[in-house]
Image 1: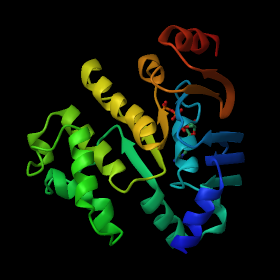
Image 2 (image 1 turned 90 degrees about the vertical axis):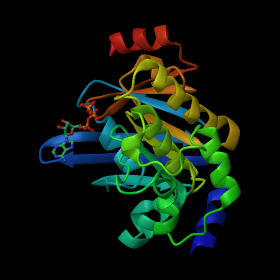
Image 3 (image 1 turned 60 degrees about the vertical axis):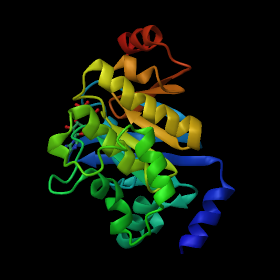
Length: 246
Ligand SMILES: Nc1ncnc2c1ncn2[C@@H]1O[C@H](COP(=O)(O)OP(=O)(O)OP(=O)(O)O)[C@@H](O)[C@H]1O
């Protein structure tokens, strides 16, 4: 199965493709027939007012949640056709996640936290790649520290390393800089930018922050569960203008 999925992934230029995706909670239509394609290697920001459906969009696009209608494909694989176990495996092998709350395991040191997705998947740790990742995030000398011994920015950099260690095709980040000061936020955004530029990974970033969104190749704007606008090659000023026009 793994081999089949990998071959399918190589055959398509689209990293993630949503078609007419709808997700309702009771009578709330959090996503209302959304179609969008994230090209391979692109860094895309997703913005929109509170409650516009950004987190729901990310959860459906990443396979954490199932839409009520429509299809989601990651690397050409239709998630709707996979059972729970295969979806979990696809997420583990091909998707990386970074959340606002870091979600590190307090009792594990930095290296154990970073390599956790590999351990869970029963995969070998590629020491050379691990070294490259921890060097890139600036934590090579902190591997034996526990999360509580790190600053917030260092903890989030560890979470980024954990997201990258499996060499995922797509990294989904939901407000990863929400709890960080501007300088530390910049370091985390630079890492996401590098994931796209240096290793060709596809990055999808949900954010409220125009400064963060301006690191992306393009920004898509959600409103009331629909994509209403796209801004290519964003600047902070242009993002703010579009935001005000929503
Ligand atoms: N588990 C849930 N149960 C019920 N309603 C939900 C649930 N999750 C989301 N919603 C509703 O769906 C809509 C979209 O929520 P979502 O969290 O996706 O928006 P968001 O744009 O990420 O918001 P924010 O910026 O405030 O985090 C909102 O009206 C929200 O109340």
